[in-house]
Image 1 (cartoon, rainbow, N blue to C red):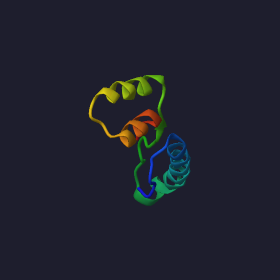
Image 2: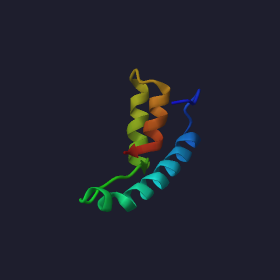
Image 3: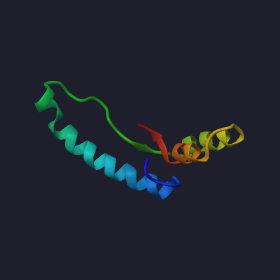
Image 4: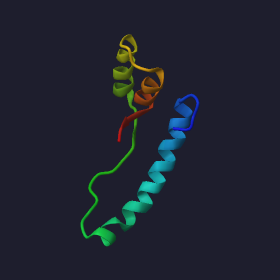
Amino acid sequence: MTTPDLSADWLTTWQHEITAMLQQTLARFETAYGYPPGDNDVLVADDQSRATAARLEDATVPADLLTFYSSIAEL
């Protein structure tokens, strides 16, 4: 990553950009490869994933990783 400090705002922007590119790719995927692409999403964190990330604060987990887990639930 080229960001000096990972922030929730940066991750939100990243999620929107990746989702837009992913939609473009998936629109052509089956034609190009001959089979459906399956599920491909970037899911933003919900209350449950944010609570799980908060429990990691007591562990030795880098702050940027906690920010990621608090912002992005699943790839």
